[in-house]
Image (cartoon, rainbow, N blue to C red; front, top):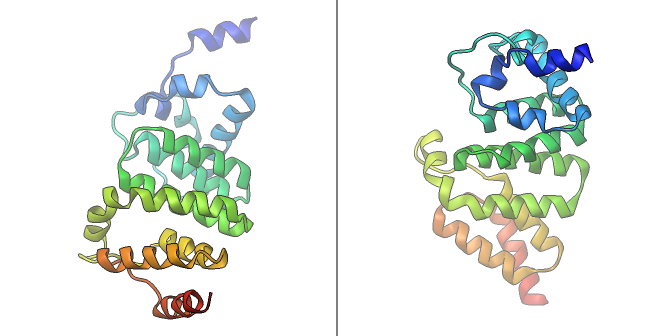
Length: 203
């Protein structure tokens, strides 16, 4: 009873207050609350560039933070991923995508989710995350160009989706994707195009 009263009347501070995440956090299952707090604390110990200590999770006054809700949860997801906790990492990344944020933030998170799915060799999730990111491309492409000195880098989601379409024998769809990549100056591997063209001609 005393513990419950304490939880109700305790000061709600820390990074949760700074990012207005208290309602989100308190609506989580207690096990998931522990996951979030655990990986925050672990990040505060292992990442020397992380600007907070474990106590800053839910206490103390934080005036400014370089994080948004989306990037904060994404950073905690990264910690879970580094620790090999795939399930928690995926959940936290997906929670991050539910938060308000920019298209480039969504792209970075989807890229991590795609890498996670590749690591697990989960082809269904690979296609889901790759398509999601490709659909967002128009919204983040200019920001990505700016970050990359004016041109687009190889984008994992395009490469993976192209691979999956080839793997499924959907050559016409793969060639349409290559045509779009050429139009938008998204780099791709020439040998992949040549291989898919040959397969399309012989199918």
